[in-house]
Length: 494
Image (tube, rainbow, N blue to C red):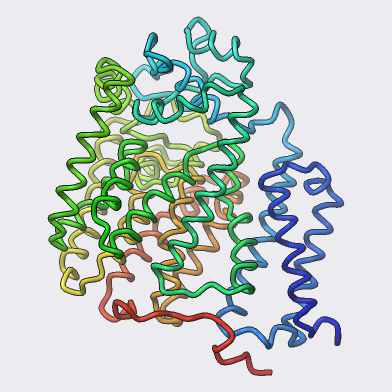
C-alpha cells in the first residue's frame, strides 16, 4: 500500500492508461483490443481506483480527484467499447465516412466533372442514410477504381469537397493516415483553447488525465474510427471563440465562417453575436461567408451548390429516426412511431406530420434557449452563450450521430472551468452519458418499446437541461475570473 500512496505510482498508472488509450484510439493495435488487453486495461483502472481509496491521491486537489473518478469510469467503458468493436463480425468499418470525403475531393480535382450527390432516397423523399450509392453510379465506379472499402454518399456542402482536394492526390491509405493525424492535432489544440477559455491552467497532472479522457471520449473514438470531421469543426468553433476573446474579430469570423460552410450547424451560434452587438465581427463573418462561398463556387461549380440546396438539404432536413441519432427531431418521430429503430436503417415510411412536427419542436427548443441568451445578454458573457448554443446545436440539428458530440468538448471544458463546483453536477452527469455512450449501448440491447423511448429521451433532455441551467443567474463565474487547478489548491483531506 505504501507504493500506491507515492506520486510516482500515480504518474505510472495514468501514463500506462494514456498509452493504452492512444494505442486503441489511433494505432488499432490488435493486442490492446483483445480479451487479454481488456483485462489489462481494467486492471489498470482498478489499481488506480484503489490508489485513490487508500489515500494515494492526496497530493492532488479536490477537483482533480473528482475528475479522476469520472475519467476512470470513461476509461473502463472505452476499452470495453473497443473490445466490442473488435469482435463485431464482418469487415471493419474503419474509414467508412472518410471514403466519401476522399472521392468528393477526387470529383472536384482538378475541375468538377460529375455530381457530388448521387444519393439513395426513400419513396417520400427522405435520404436513406444507411445505403451505399447506386452500383451503376460514377461514384461507385470511382470507389472501385481507387480500391476503397466503401462507397458511402457525400452529404456535405461542396466547400468541404474543395478542402479535400489536396488529400485526394495521395493514395487512400496515406490520405486517411494524414487525415487521422490532422484530426487528432486539431482536437488536442481545441482542448487547450477550451481550457484557456474556461480559465483553467494546465499542469502536468491535469494534462496527463485529460489526455486519457480525450482518447477515451466515445464521440472522439467514433470520429477517428470512421474518419469523420468532428475534430475540424471542434477546432474551428473553439478557435472562433478564443480569437473573439482576444479581439481578433476577422480571424474569429473566418474560423466560424469556414465551420459553417463545412457543416451548416455552426450558424446556430451567430444570433448570440447579434445580441452582444458585435457588429464588426458580424460584418467580418458576412464578408468571409461571401468570399469563401465564391471560392467554393469557383472550384466546384455553381451547379453543385444548387444541387446541394435544392436536393440534399431538403432530403436530410427530416433527419432519421434511428437509435444512433440523438437529435430532438429523431425523438419526436420515434414518439410517432412508438418505438426506436435499433439499426441504422430508418423506417421507410413515417406517420403523416411526424417530420413537420419534429421540425417545429426542434425550432421551439432552439428559440426558447436563444431567448434566454437574449435575456442574459447584459451579463456580457459572450463565450458562455457561444458554448451553450454550440452544445444545444447538437440536439436541435436533424441528425446528431454519437460522434457529433465531439463538439461537446468545448462547452464541457469551458463550463467545467467557469461554473461553481456545486453547479457542475448535472454537467458531469451529461459528460458521463456522452463520454461512455452507456445509454446508447443499453438502448440497442433493450427490446421493450416503452423503455426504448425513455432511454432515447435522456441524452437530449440532459443536454437541454445543461444549456438552460448554464444561463441561470449566478450559474457562472464572472468574466475574467480564472479557475486555477494546480498544486496551489487545497489538498484532499486524509
